[in-house]
Image (cartoon, rainbow, N blue to C red; front, side, top):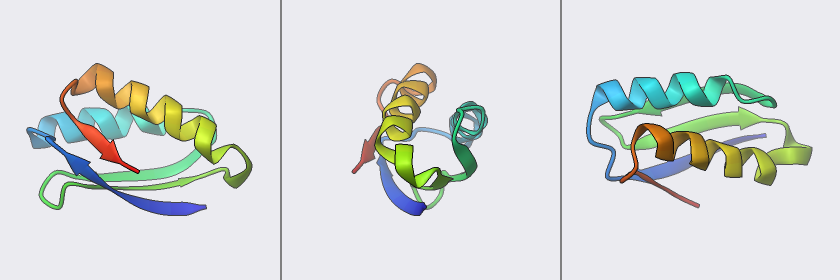
Length: 72
């Protein structure tokens, strides 16, 4: 299942790249793309576990960029 989320308070392109690498390592994530310029995250993940995966994605993103929020 592929979804696109708006990001809020993502401060720099370097942080976006770090977040993208961290999310890509999460079990069940098939692909992820985070755009600093568009402030968006596109994620393709296992549909049956999507909510569980998104909880893990939020935690991984908070570790890299504590102020950034994923608007779900």
